[in-house]
Amino acid sequence: MAHGVEVRGNRVRVYFRYEGELCREPFNGDATPANIAQAERLVGMIEYEIKAGTFSYARHFPNSPRVKSNTLGHYVDLWLDIKRNQIAASGFRAYSSRVETHIRPRWGDLQADQIDHLDIQGWVQKELMPALHNKTVREIVSNLRQIFRLYRTRNKSAHDPTDGIVITLPDAEDPDPFTREEIALLLSTESDRVQELNMAEFMIWTGPRVSEAIALTWEDVDLKEGTVVFRRARVRSQYKVTKTRRSTRKVRLLAPALRALERQAKHTKGLPPVEIEVLDRDNRTRRQQRVRFVFHNTASGEAYSTSDTLRNNWWKAQLKRAGIRPRGPNQCRHTFASQMLSSGIATPEWIAEQMGHTSTAMIFKHYAKWISKDGPDFVGLLNRALNLD
Image 1 (cartoon, helix red, strand yellow):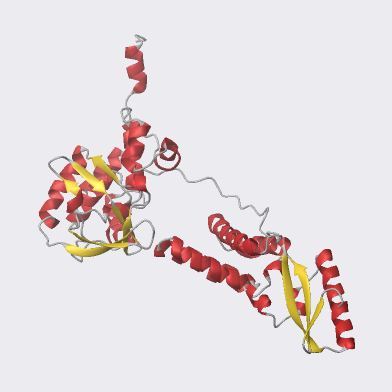
Image 2 (cartoon, rainbow, N blue to C red; image 1 turned 60 degrees about the vertical axis):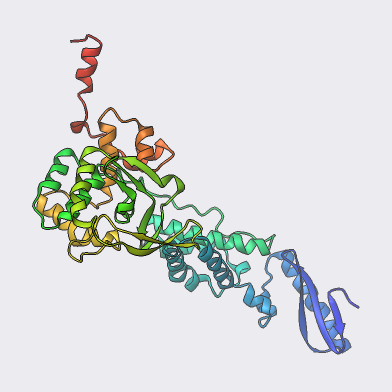
């Protein structure tokens, strides 16, 4: 029998090696000498196109199951299934949204091996960059790269058309913490939302993520010892363990934070516990807990479900009433880090531990900013220490 052609009964089948795999496809027509010769010519053409890099599986065998399984959309589905089991539902929604909004509509129906680097580069430059922030574009390209990496696990010799595509990000914005003057204005400006004022003071002088503050329970608080344990967060209406193992931490409270909790105890400590479900770090295990939340939404009388509710329903208005330049409640965490750094006493290592980080570099890069007006008079201190007066 001719190379690349086999006969089974009265049927003809061609075979060839493509992207490291042996492929077999039926040839239309009975096993006549003419059809067998035609099949041999087809194999020769396919092998020539494979060597030349012009072979299209879908053009020669449009009804092949391999064609369907070779579309990028097929690997998009596989990749999403993997991600669904790897990450929390809140994170998965972000991945799924980027894929379904940008990647699948443009590339899903195409054969993965036919997607070209220059086509992707053009898509990025002409369609994505004019419409989206650089960070979003980089996330989309990163997702597409991961999909192609999955494709290459099955097609070892396949190229990655995203290779060499780089999205440069602008310099990160500096932390924008509150000064001591702004802190005083924020907390002294009259508001009928007393619990929110307590929460703001607690966050400013303890430094939790907003998601950790709204998930804090009285079971995590020891007013006598003056400590709290951050062990969970509320992210997109779901309770989950803290962001990292290091983020689960016990911290000693500064005096203003402890006073805020003591005031808050009058509002919520005596309430009956509620049952919640907490997602564990494997994003699969769910544990039931009975807890009493420390901070409640004064308007609804219930614990906060999202940080957006705090920001939109009280925070923005309170800053406006206080005459403070607008920024989000996440700046309370930045304020804690910056005030501690500006004190000239707290070390970066201590600040990192209080905030649940292992690296002091994170403190300088993302959170802390030296506030000279709130810091010590180092020049005066040095003059006296070195007898320079």
